[in-house]
Length: 344
Image 1 (cartoon, rainbow, N blue to C red):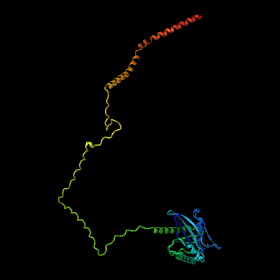
Image 2 (spheres, rainbow, N blue to C red):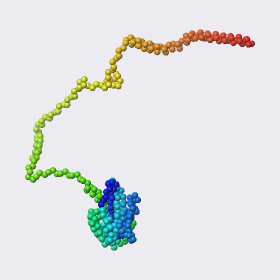
Image 3 (tube, helix red, strand yellow):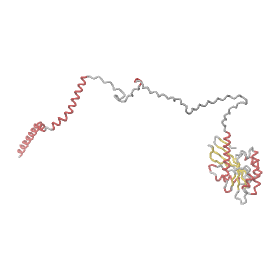
C-alpha cells in the first residue's frame, strides 16, 4: 500500500520481485544498486544461505525524483525462491504496490514458473490483494540462452492478464531498468487515479420536476399575430420626419465663466491695477530733472569735441607755465656758469 508522508512530502511505494528460485530476482536488484546514482539509492541488504540464494529479502530504497511536488521513494524487495519459505513470501508481499514477476527462459524451468505464479496469486489473496487490481509486469529473463523458450510460449503460460512484458539478460544489465521503469509508471498512474477518485466532486444540479401524469398542464402563451405584409401598388403612409434638433441657447452674460487670471498684471484676462494719485508739482519737478539730465548727457560729447578742435585756446592757457619754465632754466644756467668760472 502506498504510504504518503505529508510532513516530509514523500510517497513510499513498495515493489516486490517474485519468481522461481535462481530466476534472476536478486541479480536485478544488484544491477539497479550498481548503476543507480549514489545520492538516490540506499544500502542493499541481502541475506543469503551457503548456496548464495536469497533467504529473506533484498531491500533497496530508490529515490526517483518528485511527482506533484512530493518526492517518491521506491522500496525494492525480493522473495526467497524456495517453496519451503512460503511464510516469508507472504510477509514480504504485505502492502505491495507493484509486482515484477521474473520468469526463467530455460525450458527446464517451465513448470517452476507456472508453480511460482500460482503461489503468487494465492499469497496475494491471503494478504487481501487481487492480482487483477495490483500493477504487475513480466520479465522474460535469461534470453541469452541458446535453448531459451519462445516468448509466445511464455506469454501463453504466464501472462493471462495481458500485462506489459520485457525481455532481459539480468547478468549483463539488459532489460533491468526498462522493467523497473515500466512498473513504476503503472504504480504512479494507479496512485494518481486513486487520488482523483478520492476528491469530492461538486453535486450535480437536480433536474426540474416533471408534472404528474394526468395533472392539468398550464396554458401556453399564444404566439403574437404576424404583422400584415404591404400590398404591392398600395399607397404607402407618409413617413414621419423627425424634427430638427434644438439649437443650444447661449448662456446669459452673468453665467459666462470669468477669464482665468494671468501671472502678470495687465495681461489679457485680468484688469490692470488702478492708477495711483500723484502731486502735479512733484511730477513737473521730476520731468524737468529728467530733461536736464538728458541735455547734460547729450552736451558732454559736443563740448569735448569743441575743446579738441581748438588748439590755439589750449596754447593760450598753457603760455604762463611755459614762460615760468624758461625763466627757471635760464636762472639755473647762469648759476652754473658762475660756479664754473670760480673754479677756473
